[in-house]
Amino acid sequence: MYNKIDKEIIKSLTDISGSENVIYDNENLELYSRDYTENLSFLPEVIIKPADAKEISEILKLANIHLIPVVPRGGGTGLSGGALPLYGGICLSMERFKKIIEIDCENYQATVEPGVITQIFQENCEELGLYYPPDPASRGSSFLGGNLAECSGGPRAVKYGVTKDYVLGLEVVLPTGEIISTGAKVLKNVSGYNLTQLMVGSEGTLGIITKIYFKLIPLPKFRKVILVAFNSIEDSAKTVSKIFQSGITPAAIELMERSAIKAAEDQLGKKFPNTNAAAQLLIEVDGNYEESLDKDIESIAETVMENGAYDVILAEDNQKMNDLWALRRCIGEAVKSISEYKEEDTVVPRAKIPELIKGVKEISEKYGITTICYGHAGDGNVHVNILKDKMNETEWNENLDTAIREIFTHTVSLGGTISGEHGIGYSQKSYLSIALGENEIALMKNIKKTLDPNNIMNPGKIFAE
Image (tube, rainbow, N blue to C red; front, side):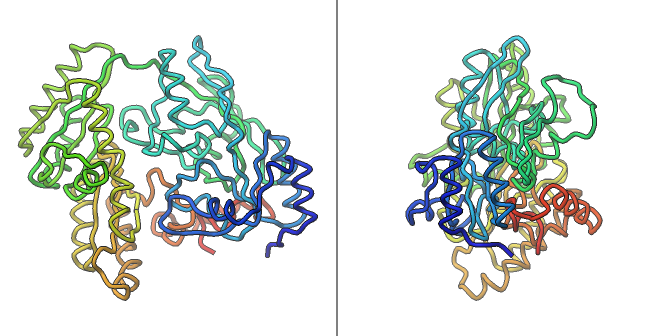
């Protein structure tokens, strides 16, 4: 259904963005053919790096005329294949959109371009005493635009919310080339449909974000971190809800089972406390009064010890806190280095985490697969990594899809859904009907068709053909 790119189209793209920003050598095409999703690779035909919304508009108008697919790309750190150019075409890289235009300390707002790296933006805010809490594991390399496309969360979502909770408005280029503004730099806004939130989480299928207006909050002055060891993963999971029932809302509660921690130790080349524990919780509290945090930590320690914990370790300084967070942040890459894998991004009401993990382990045993669970237990978001490990190729191919479907069906039966922060993209689209009904999917497809009548914008994502 799509046309190939010829010399005339290359010339037109060059006229739009300049020859130095239109790339089609084999080495770069290979580099831009993959993101962080498993070992998948799809070659684009050309890479273009536009400088502003007007250039993107011209590129999309050209793509519509010639029926050429366009795949927007940020930092390439996605975990569901959102940036994979399934049908070749144009890979539209946002890496030149890297300006922090303004940080407004009076109104606690910021205006940024989508190619800004998340961590750089956070650090710029923190230097001014401001805080942008969304905190994906890839924050050192992921772009803010990609965070919006997937509605990234991270560990601190339990207290502070996810990306969508900080977006006031956007500048967006629609698939047909029109440039629109959504939202406003205000905290209240019910002027028509909420187009801002339609774009956030749309995985690059409804438009290309070229400017972001963020809400910020004051930076907490203090934080404290503890590492809590358990003899069973079930006890660790059950304890999460008990902490909230005690009246405390931590900034983060991360669950890590033993095999996840050992993989991280191997990756970092260093040992951590209680690594033979069946599971551990990494818990952070933050606020403006250190005495209050000390009381919170004491209360949490009492709660976890009453619910099966056998050791509580307090990270007493910033270096120790950062070391523990380094352990947690490297788990994803560490687990993936073990063998061929599939990563699932399940999310349930947090009181259902024990049932979720119990079901995952039962399904794993049923099909003889290895699963490693870790993730954001405070908001019910558990990453389930399914490893090929010692399975032979035949068993892996025969059992994998069935096991994933059962895990997702189990997740939905608990009131959950199949993606909390990684998106559906390419790798999860065949499972979407487990979470959503025919009417919901049909409505989404109609929205897509209305905004993108020629289906050129990131085709092949979210919906099964």
